[in-house]
Image 1 (cartoon, rainbow, N blue to C red):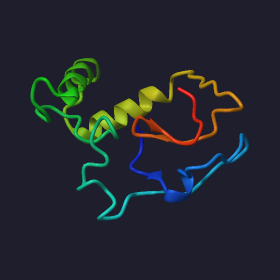
Image 2 (cartoon, helix red, strand yellow; image 1 turned 120 degrees about the vertical axis):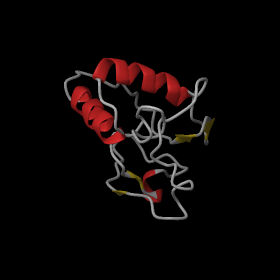
Image 3 (spheres, rainbow, N blue to C red; image 1 turned 180 degrees about the horizontal axis):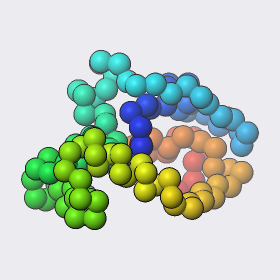
Image 4 (cartoon, one colour; image 1 turned 45 degrees about the horizontal axis):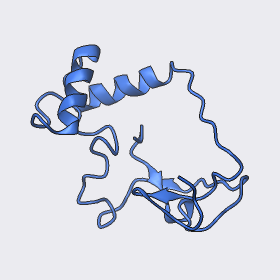
Length: 116
């Protein structure tokens, strides 16, 4: 889940080991033709599409909408996005990665020797 509309550029998702100190700062809003038919920012990929009446029962967005609308009280997508970002900023979250967690694993399929 991305909290902004920017996504990593191609240089940020190499299919090779960049080492434990590799980093990338190439982030931008996807251009037409590379934005999954304009659905690139719709939940669960981004915060778009989270508002009252945005999806039907049985869809993952329906469950998220129901929970968020009940707990946040916002009804528009921009209000929900703003509240989610504001609440996320109050959390103390820590991600733990090992020295071998350096490969990009995309869409459930891992490359090279990325361990599961």
